[in-house]
Length: 326
Image: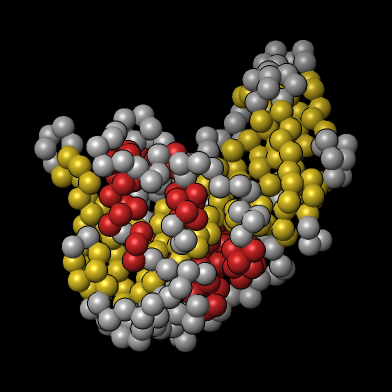
């Protein structure tokens, strides 16, 4: 973990936040065509006791509601009021996309591919630059919440760079059902944090434009375990005990549709399947064709395409291939 310095005064976005205070600072990022300001609430809770600063974000992709719900619950349940140190919550980073239920920024760019951004670039790039230079520097540890894109439903999991053994251990503390070892993507928030020496856990769960109670609870409980590990969780909270330990996934494979047609899923997300087990059927609309989709290998199903219609070549299932700690 990055070195934690005891701070008496937290300086963020030109504001000084004193210990033992609660405040919301509006991050002014742009204006609409109507000249109306677009502002992102940055919600800060500080203990009187010095300690680390935890930055919790969601909504980098505006249509990923599950992550927003996780951070909302953390705030609503006052889990973000730390026993020591500071907690900064930003439930919606991409307000533009959130308003339109769109993954992207108005300039058509994926915010999670333009970090660390540039001062004079596109709108998304300028926002990334401001965030990285004006908010991220105060953080000692980061949690970022996402969901599966489009109609793909992700089993709840943490993604970490396999080279960072410290983060692999912290992922065990969060204890999502699965921990995926995956390289940082260039231009992503996660990759930028890594380059700047900031520890970050990326949580994935559910699908876009959808809200899952189970996914949200998993994200909240994992955050509580991280806060407890950092000695920041208020003693009044009861630490949730997980049913099992996170499975460390070293390798997984995608199964793709061999035919176009109507997709009928037969198994639930996270199910352990055997090679050859029936996962779905693909039919045509006219009752003439029925193709049975069978598991290509033994493993856990960690992603399911819930689209009712698929084309040949579309990714429909992701199955674990190699689990390290099983």
